[in-house]
Length: 135
Length: 384
Image (cartoon, rainbow over the protein chains, first blue to last red):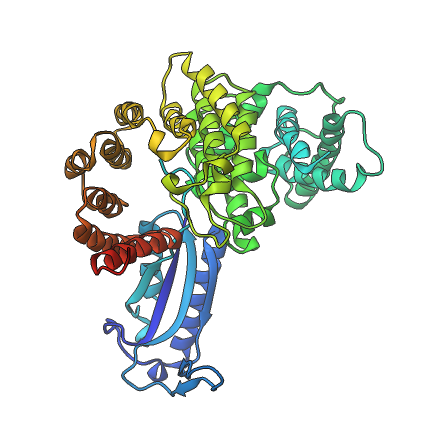
């Protein structure tokens, strides 16, 4: 079993096939999209492959230490050019092939015109645990 | 009675219910509930026949569940009257449960989860914590697995190899939580040796014991991995080694070699060396040759190349490595190590960096990164 992270980007990913921003969708299209996402997560819960998923707010900032005794330095809001993560999902599946299959399914969520978005999702394996038998 | 002792009774209890005609999925739920009652009731009133008590309690619970099921779904059940308390079931039934939980129709993760719950008696929450997934996810995984095998026949011999594979996964995947999965795998392997005289079951148990013996030496207090060569062998658990060696020798004496016996033999040779320098690498290479013949596994060939490097020198090891696929996991780490031993520090440092970038877990990545840094420091004259 291996865990994978799906990253959905607001910005920074290659352009989707059906690349229309959500604020230009019809209300019914947005509802259909939300329903699809909920059904997808429910399906993963049912198969015992779901770990977590969260959407992230667009605002945020860079933060770094500025040395002992000083408050951290912040830099934000993010510049328009920054790669921006919209949300993530974590799954626990039997194989990389299964992870890709699921990411493909998620990418086909309906968008403008009710057609699949075909957006690019980033799929990243988790580091595993060290195995016991080494020799 | 400790928890492990209680859980030792579970396969027999579950098998007894299934033997009486209970469907596996409902019976498994009933046994879990009987266990909860046992934990509540036994401290104040301990029955004489613990297993008999569990069977009776689980059977009553099964009947309740089955009746409720009938009322709800109007489905026929095969059994509805309470039979007299039967004798303890034969070990054959326990073995059938292992087969069922490792059924070939199950994906490995499902087989692992079902085995830990139905044979091991762990709770769904414990299994979920051990594998770092939400409880609800693990509950679904287990209930799907139960549905998948619900039509499987219990009266046919299964494939012992899949059972051994499942136990190996439980032992070898070092996940955490409160449950000691390695100890659990050992307990289940021990139980399995009581139900079958298959020589590879003994081989697997020996392998587990010999590796488990090293556990106190395998990680530093801060969690960092200690390679075999650097381990404090005084920390190795000699009682486990003695048991592992005894189990292995009895198995090898039967002259039906299998991959787990061969792996255990390699672990036994390491256990036998008082210091890393005293390791009998020539014999270890011979066992790797056996393992390659048995499995033809590229990973085994990679380990063999490293052993050849120890037995016949790093150049021989590098020559053995040259025949293998460079994209194998740990190929770069092995190559780095052999180059380091051959005195080619610059190449080794670069290879350690590349190997760290490909590491599959954090402990290994940290170890490889540290190796690279140490060699680079040597190259720049920063030490001695």
